[in-house]
Image 1: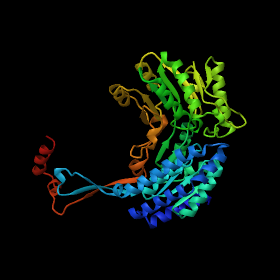
Image 2: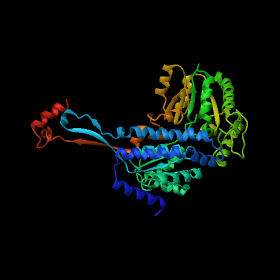
Image 3: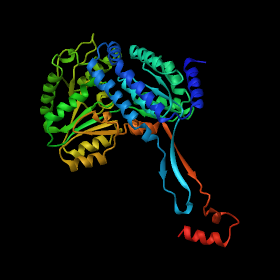
Image 4: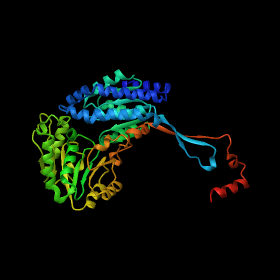
Length: 463
């Protein structure tokens, strides 16, 4: 039996012994996780810095540790409320019966973690699974081995192996993990790998939540301050050097505002990163493969007639530092407009009318996030209601992911299912409907032998 299978059987047996932990136990588990993150924030950030070659310590604490702590604190506060049975109305024909929904843990949950935000994307789903009362196995990314090893050590010290276990390993371990008959599997990663995960899980009919990616657009409406939009788009794009699943992937803007946007973006890049890509707050690309992929994507676009405008200096192939770069004139058949970029390249696509911009987004696979910049509330409401994406942030970028009371998840090619807050609790729970029959009820009227009485009742029921 493989280590992965052994731990799964261990957790499944433990769940059968204790299938529905009370709120007090769940709150204790959540507090243990919160304390672990707070006490080890420096060590976690340092391990990830080493895995990246350079990853801003402050960025890791702000974008990974802080939201994970926030999620654990939120669930700790609300889990007892989420667990309460829900009363449901009963039709007059079934009075005086009682209907309600109970929320039960599913059993053993699996979480597959990507390399780009491995602390938050391990701890966030773990919060949801623990709040719902499950046992959990976590597969860390082989591209962040130091972080994965440290996370495994910390979890082993804080939780029994039959409660929370961390698995590390390469592609073969990931394949086995995805094929394990979990009661629920949550995967965060690329759309391409999402296809493989879903196929692997289908063998055991394991339900999946897929948090994928895609080309998330930022749309600047006519009349909106280009200066303000450039500031917020560039901030969201440069977080983790663009290696963010919800990073703005390209910008749709009025055609007469392109030059103003470029000038504003250059100013904001210099303000955010005074030493350019060499700044301590600017992260490296995770490995040589991804660095080369981004350079090739940029150079292919330029060879095809596009223009690449670096917003700063300080780039270095040796350090895998790639400057924030605006790309203009990219055609839709270029790779930079076909694939999720996952790096600090930002194509600009000018439009003549807002309807043209919205049609462009609608004609492409549904994105994980959409960013819309507008001061016109009626027009904003129209875009929110008529567009289709996983989530929307209006007049900023990325911030929807930090709202614990909002569901987070994709749609179509950008994923399925959601988590965070109560939605995460629900994802990892079985909502079981229960009907309790009353001692005194009128259902004897509907039982055979059928005759004139039932004929009269049917006329009344079907009128």
